[in-house]
Length: 237
Length: 357
Image (cartoon, rainbow over all chains, first blue to last red; front, top):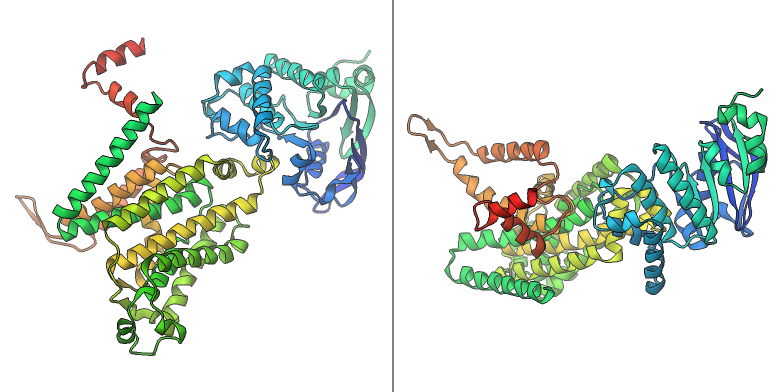
């Protein structure tokens, strides 16, 4: 579905991505894990067109993404849940969700998707008329995911959905990610919380300083000694 | 319940209408002038609030757009004889000196030219953000004013234009103000309005939702400028004279004060504060004359009211940063709630107590 080939991105003279390649297959949960500064966010920024790569290719279903402006990505079926949630704080929950469906004009389907989002996140339904800024961090994350779902994505990309959330809420969010996946949405998940991410992933890539150093199924990576040492904080005997 | 609310709305519209009929008959010309100014400032405030409050573009070029509207309307509606007597330094440029248009088309063209200027200015300026956009638009506003000052054969330069037909009356100003309110309300509640607000809240998230930033910013900017042009045209026709001087950045700040006091992003707030600011600016004129405090006499200082005005602005910015209404709007539900909570009204305090429990 999404293919990245030899992607190179440089900020000034420093290369943040030194030629990475990865592939997201349709119907899978793929995760990209790594420490701060590994280049996870840069990869995502390149996909959505916020950063211009120096070299390499990004393709979505055979279409070159490098020439597609950010605003047209949703029309192709790619939606990003941005890092730090970025909900529209002074607008109500309802308005936020409606904005998710901004480019669509199939009123009936929008209504059905709204019901679906409310089913996934009953808490949002209770807060329909509240402004998004008054929600808790976890609820805001749910709103950000719900808003993204309103655009009817085929590929949902999430940047650090667990950032700054309590462990219990993180578990809840990951459960919902699994549920969304079960309903047929392909997911590219970018996480520092390698443990949680690898547990639900079909395929994982581990990044370090601008390179992909390991890849494999989620299970393989979870049991990999190097990954354990570097990201899971377990001592290796 | 919905029917009931519609009935209330209808009743209040009729009440406002009756008040205007009464005012038109019984108020003296000074009071009517103030009423007209209030309505014009409602139009100007709403047009600026669309750009600054709803779309979050910090634009300070409003006086320039008003000037374009005011001059267009003035030039097109002036009778030929008046044109000739105005342009005694240099004759008026060719086609203009033989054209006289009716009021409405002239006013509309003023708005459209203003919108066209906004398009030309917006194309480069709207790529900027925040303070930089403010500086650029402030500069463009001044450029418009300087161009008008120097286009002697079109605008009569610094001498200004006198003897503009005084078509504007209470019905024109309040009628157009009402239309503006209705238009803005519909616009803000449409998907365009939601897109404007999304851009104000978070540009990156808005773009990810498929909103074209440039297109929507430009749209808000152009519509705002159109109504600024209409407001300017009404103002010129109300005063009977236009010259470049009043269209400097002080004019922009006056309108900015109205929307900051009313609440950036609230139509209700803008309407209320347009009335408050316009009326208080007149009421504060007392301060310009000498005041006898009984034990001492303060000599009259012209400009004293501007000092008070500035102090008020500072107080508002420090203590009421969200303005009177914030981003919320009037609704009957909220109005009833408000009166129920007033402790002095019948059963009000009791309600409040039971509610707190």
